[in-house]
Image 1 (spheres, helix red, strand yellow):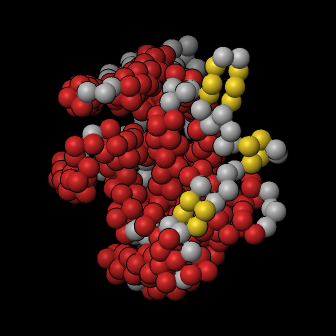
Image 2 (cartoon, helix red, strand yellow; image 1 turned 30 degrees about the vertical axis):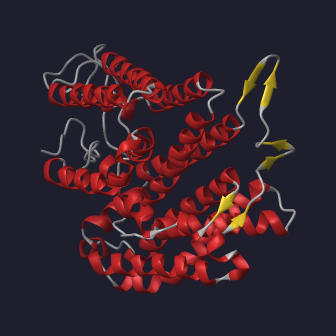
Length: 412
């Protein structure tokens, strides 16, 4: 395949897709530059929508913004604009990652003094890290896990105990929270590997319920009352202190927002590297057909174990950060309902699509906080949303593109 200059377009050796730019080839894809502009424009419009939605006090105005966003998204999908923007995300990784990162920094700057807005941003980013781990498990390797909140809680309680009773650096505590969650998850390896589908789901559901019960009856860990956790410090930088610059006061949640953004960026980078590597290929093969994968020499048990422990490690790191950010942990923070929320984010965003995690997390985490009048019905709304997606968008709001290994082959 050649580009506009008559030279062969470079091929992505892992994804197998053309990464060069060229004129429209008749498929509606358009030039790479146009696709890139559409993608950047989409990020900017999303940023403006997020800023207006966060600043909106009138709930009817917020609902109107959401309706307009839904109509615009539907139109973009039907017209092919969304697919062209997605192609730009795939072919201009560094530029698009930088654009999204800049969008988050602009959001932090706009709401630099608003505690609530920055706390919501931190919560969305923390949930995004957990759901990226669940995406590795369920979306890539096909390992069902309905105990995401339990492993999130393991990281939180690990941070609570270590931060109070040791002098370990808090960055090391974050890492140990992930290690502990992965180690506790190893207990479930045998039943998870011996079961499939809804049977494996029942195993993780049972673990989540047992974990919360254990916390409630264990007085060493505070019982039902929970534990206080000291604020996070990094090389003497106390994140719980406001920042004073002249007459400008910056909320201390801005410190946590920056750290949460770094954690989310690292988790996203690891996820995308795995997706584009031979490890991602092995995960996909295991998810699609275990029998066929083992026939071709892929060790199914090894890759299931790798995905399960890595995903739980993500949840543990996020939980440790969340504990030191909020300053308190209790069993009520890690219920089965919270696990369902995390799973709903993965399903709504699109199974296996890392980019879909963020918008889905915003919808699931932020909307109930902004629309206080529907707080009592949030789980009913989640159930309705998931059912509608399963009926009309089986692959989620942002479905993962099919891998292609032959230039110009669309997989149809």
